[in-house]
Length: 274
Image 1 (cartoon, rainbow, N blue to C red):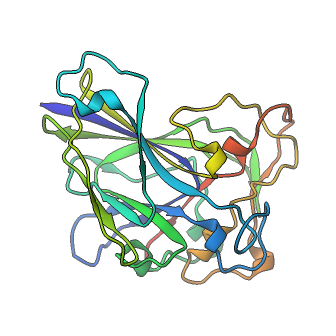
Image 2: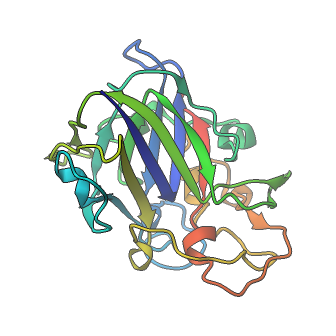
C-alpha cells in the first residue's frame, strides 16, 4: 500500500541541503526551525525577547482522523504536538528526491556561507528549536507572493508555505521524535491514511499565530520588511556583519489592509550544509 505524505511548512524555516552527509549516505534536506529570540545578534527586527525577536514556537498539527485505521473522512479536529528541542527524522522514507526550492532565496548564494554541520546534528544549540530531515519527495511553494527585493536581488518569490510531498510504501506512518540539545525524545502513535493520504502541518510562528489552518491575508503595504528574517544569518558558519544582514522588503503595490504578520514577517530561506 502506498501513502501520499504531505507536510506543510509554515513560518520561520531554513531549508538546509546536505549533498554529502558525513555518514556517506544519500543527500538529505534538513528543515531547521529557528528560535529567533535566542539569536545572539544584538540587533533585531520586530521587537520581543532576547536579541530583539519575538519568541517562535515549533508545533505540529494533524487531523485526529489519522489516529484511527479505516477512518472514512477527516474530522476537522486537530492533534497538536510541541516540537521544542525535537527532531523528526523521515530520511528512512526513500524514493525520488528533488531538494530544489526555487521559490526561496539562497543564503549561500547571497553570502557565500553555508550552514555548519553541527547545526544539523544532535546538538545544534538553542538557535535551532526543531528539525525535520527528509531524503525523498519534492517541495511546492504555496501562497508565494512577489515581488520582494533582498539586497541586490529583486522580483523574488518567498513562499509563505512550502508543501513537501513524498510517497510512503506502507499501510501506516510509524514515527517518533528524537531529542535535540540533550533533551529526550518522544514516542508518537502511528498514523493511518484517509483516502490514501496523510497531511501534516509544521508551524514555527509566534504563539498568537499558531493555527492548524491558514488565515486570510492581504498583501503587505509597499516597503514592508520581513521582520523575522535576520536570524537566518546567525545559523550560517560565517555570518555577515550585522549591517549587511539584509531582510526582504515588499516591492509591490500592496493593499496593506489585512493581518500581515502571519504571512509576511516569518519567511523562509535555503542554504547548503558544509
